[in-house]
Length: 382
Ligand code: GLU
Image (cartoon, rainbow, N blue to C red; front, side, top):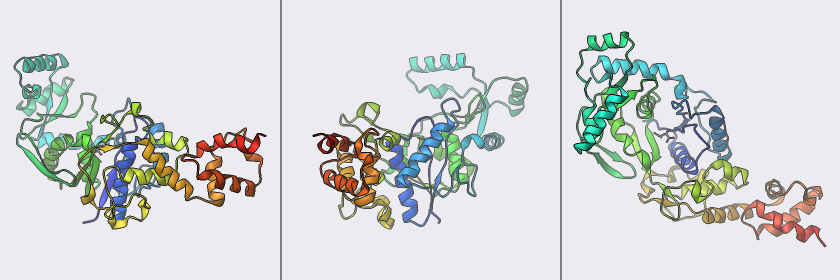
């Protein structure tokens, strides 16, 4: 079986450090197993998705050296790689499912839905239990309603059973029979939902492995039923542990810089970020902390993932940065540090040899290139 692994970000913001970790893992696994690493842009949320975010995310990934074999900017045999350009296919497949009796148009209005949800709440049952009104509507009746312009969604007909799969990180996972109901695959706007497109694409793009964050674990329940309905092969799933801050809460802005762009702007070294991210939830078989992630090859295996949440600690990242900064020397060291030195500093007017001597002197004292600024007065003030 050929290994194909994708990273599927939504371009609704900058690339999150957790997303970069998923991308890195997917890339390392594909590279280590002679496979392909694919970038797919999940932009079905038309309001929040922006092309400029997609561009910056691609830049961030390039900066980290996580380069894809197929994607919207480089093409490939399984394109298009932007979901917004695949909408017609999703809709056609949805109607095919309707034809096969595996999905159905549903005409519940928002007022009706609210009422049913309130009723279910008062009866302390799951709201989706009541969302099945149009499940068995005669197809010709449904067609009449659609022809008359009645607003509708397409719901997937949940076959109502328990779903089990073997996650490569979490082991056997079972979802209870009543976890979801007949869920919407195509919204009334005509736009398909994430859980639906994701399966169609992973199937059509022939993914062998899907690596993503633990927060997507529950989505796998809906996705499994869809694979079955499509008669499609289920990929291997690996749900990697959450990244948390010191307070053990999911990593967010209040814990500090969380976007790759911020680290790029602050002139961190990409090799330091890769090395640190690689160790957040995965461990080296020889217990190494410092290693070249690109040289891992087959060493990057699925059986070294941890199930526990990984603590994201910027101090630790800075420690890795210091290590890689000290490993630089000569012109490379200067090229890196000078990007962070204030443009007005007399540093920039010095000779190359002087700059090298200066940077070699201070590199042992700093963790980040920007800290070099505080040493400049030593050189230029009497
Ligand atoms: N677009 C989803 C996200 O950004 C991808 C989830 C997946 O990998 O299936 O979280």
